[in-house]
Length: 438
Image 1 (tube, rainbow, N blue to C red):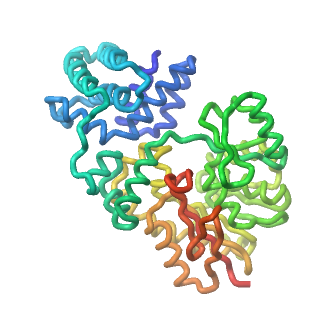
Image 2: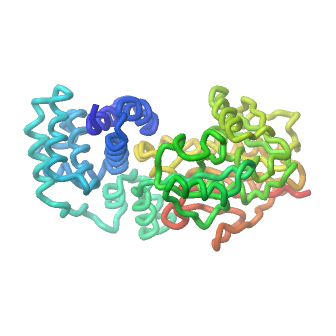
Image 3: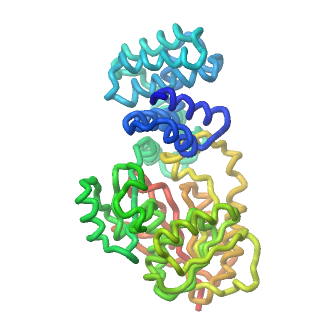
C-alpha cells in the first residue's frame, strides 16, 4: 500500500463512519505502511485534508463544472487529496501530485471519474499557488471557509473576541502540532533527560512553561529514549500547567474525577513527589486500564482507580480531598487542530454540555475539604462552557471563591485563565482555580 491509497482509506472511514482521525490513522496507516516516509506523507495528507475541508471544497468548486454536492463521495475524497498536495504540501512536484492522485481512480474502481479528476487537478495546478481568494474577507463566512471552521463557531468567536483575534486563532488551528513531553522527575531530572535527547540527536525546544517540559516536532513516542523506563509521558503544556496552578503538595489527597487517559493524575503524582494518595476516576471502566498502564510505566504507586459517574454523590467522599480535579466533558473546540473531525460539530451538538458541566461541578464541590482546592478545566474556549459555568457556580456557592494565579507573564482573571494556540502555543484550554473557605 502507498501513501495516497492509505490516506484515501482514512478519509473514507472518517467520511462514512464518522471515525476519529487519530484512530483511523493508527489502524490503517501504521498497520499498512512500514516505510516511515510513506507513513508520514499519508498522515500529512489525511490530517491536512480534514483540517481544510471547507477551503479545499471551495477551491474544487472554482475549477469543477460539477457542483460539489453532486459529486460521488469517493470522487470528492480523491479530489481533496489532490488539492491537499497542491495547496498545502509544497514539496511534492505538481506533476506527481496530479498523476498519483488520478491513479487512485483505478485503484478504487472509479475509472469513469478519471477525466474529471485529471481536469480539475490540472486546472488547480496551473495556478501555481495563486489560488482564487475566498470572498467576503472580514466576515464570519470568510473565516469559516478560509480556515475550515463551523460558521456558528466563527460567528461566536467574532462576537466574543473580535474579528482579528478570531482569525489569528483559526489560523493557528491549521498549524502542525508538535509533541509536548513532560519529564517524570520521580525517576530522572530534566537535565539528565535533556542529555539523553542530545545523545540521540533528537531536536527539541524548551518552552517557557511548564517546568520540566520538552517540545518536539513529533515522531513515534515509543521510540523516544526513556519511554520503556517511564522517564516521561505525553501531555499538552496547557493541561500540565493547569495541574501546576493547583499548588498540589506532597502528602495531599487528590480526586481526579474525569481522569482518563491519566495525564492530570500523573502530573499531580509528580508534583506530590510520590507522597500522598490519588483516586483517579472515570465513567468508562474500560478506559481506566489506560490510567493503570500509564501509572505502572511511570512508577507511580500512590494512584488507585474507580469507575465513577462524576454526577453521582458518594457520601464517603464528602470533604475527603485536599484537591478535586474536574476536567469535565466538553465540546473539545480548543483541540480542533489535533482532532480535525471536531470541525464538523454543529451548534446543537453541544447545547446540553453546560448543564452537564454545572452538575458535575456542583457534585464534586462537596468532596473538597475546607481550605481545599476545586480545579475546573476544559479543552474548549467557549465562554458558555467556561466562565459562565464558573460564574453560575459561584453565585450559588459562597463557600468557594476564585483564587488568582499566573501563567508566565499573564495573569488569571477571577481565578480563570484561557490558553490560546496563537498566544500560548498550546491547545485551547481553560482552567479555573477555586478555594473553599476554611
